[in-house]
Length: 330
Image 1 (cartoon, rainbow, N blue to C red):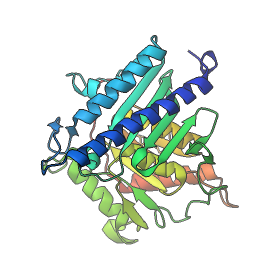
Image 2 (cartoon, rainbow, N blue to C red; image 1 turned 180 degrees about the vertical axis):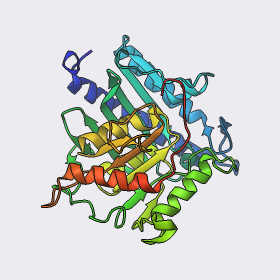
Image 3 (cartoon, rainbow, N blue to C red; image 1 turned 60 degrees about the horizontal axis):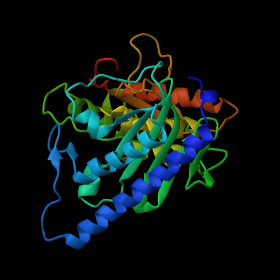
């Protein structure tokens, strides 16, 4: 199905309204939790391990969103984090021939929510031919709504275009030095040499170490930021606040909306690990679970913004250790 067969304006407005209604449910749940708090820890269920959690609020909001979508668009497919996670398969289910598919994270940042850290959001994406064409991320505790539809640009709170600085500044000529680097520890905490925890740790050290350190891999980034939400990491890369976002272990519902928003803000999203041969910067594989995003970049006399983005991608690839998050169909 082509984009022109769908009314993207209508679908975009529907997604924004739905995110606002779901956001109010999230705020109401937090308000109720505070008013009824009696010293107990918030109830949650462990999925993979003690940092991979689901609360009743996750499940209630997902069911609300699913019901609204099924009522409005009964021919569309729905994939949500909690319903997918409840099954045994980890196969990537979205293909270029899939019907229009809504890809939802009802509460991205569940650990943040449990601790009442406000970096929590609802992430809603619509995929057509396997690609995100509408993306909405609502962080209601911060009154921050990020949104985009294909061809319509990216927006903050529906009125402020992204990125915030327009035209965007060039990327540093010696990047990753001078950049803000966004990353997450993730849920794979196995204490296994060559495991993803060790690979991420080495990658973070490489990006942060002084120039010339770490056997020449030191990147001397300005800072390292972890918001506890891949969707919000992507949103802040779209604003231009983060220069580089590198992540592994996410699922499509974590990143689909943010990828749409970053693309429409002029950013680049590609694979978080270099190709086995060459250094071509290809299109991101949504189900690949390894991602690298670069903010929008202005041109200089020496290179275009697009050339600079690809230059930074290759510099990051030199410093990160490829992560292992393989899955069927991804």
